[in-house]
Image 1 (spheres, rainbow, N blue to C red):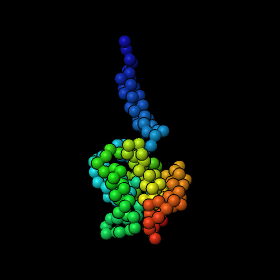
Image 2: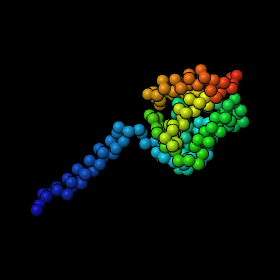
Image 3: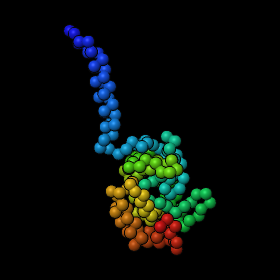
Image 4: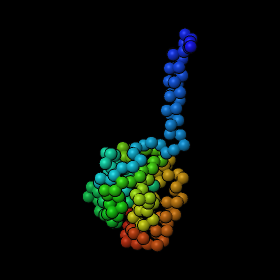
Length: 169
């Protein structure tokens, strides 16, 4: 059984070409692979940022909470941090990424869920966070988040019923 003078080399080139073409297509049709899909939260920095056991820092997408770090004492900042802590600290979370993986500070940008509940939208819904849309991320969810914020404001939930000045608006 003869392969001819180029049988082995041709097979190697064909295999290499197939692998080269398949690599960029591996993630087609799914979210970008920016970081871990699951991890345990080891530290809660504030209401919208956490540290993972994998070493990454994650900034929640589509929302912003009043500041509570570096000496800041914005109204409801500590409340947002505590609520976030109660939800995720020491728990395994699922992370879903959007178009851009990191912000200018090198933090991963993600939607974070625990026990099947997305934390990002829950913080907005309960009045612990304002909507913060930074395109291109969140383009498909901006209306959903703005609706949650409007409902929280109308009901006076969280900071909307407690703070004279809402600093994340």
